[in-house]
Image (cartoon, rainbow, N blue to C red; front, side, top):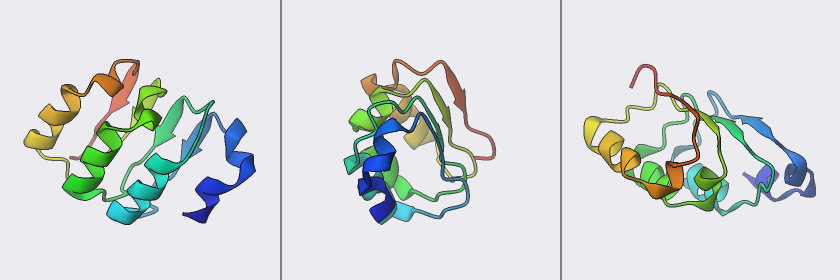
Length: 100
C-alpha cells in the first residue's frame, strides 16, 4: 500500500491490481492516494468487502476513471445498486463486473 504514496504514481494512467487481495485496508490506502492521470483501473479479485466498495464509491479516484474492471469481488445486488447510484461513477465509459 505504500506504493500508492510514491511520486511515480502521479503519471500512472492504467493501474492493474488484479489478484492483490487489497481487502478494506488496501482500499482505504487506494482511495486516499492521488492519481491525477488515472483513467483505467483493474480491481479484479481484490476482495473489498462492503466497506471497501462504499469507500471506493465515495472517492475522487472513481470520479476520474473511464474504465473499471471489478470482477470476482462478491459484490452483491445491494452494493451494485449503491454503486449504480454513485455520482462519482458518471464518467465511466467501460464497466466490467464479471463473476460477482
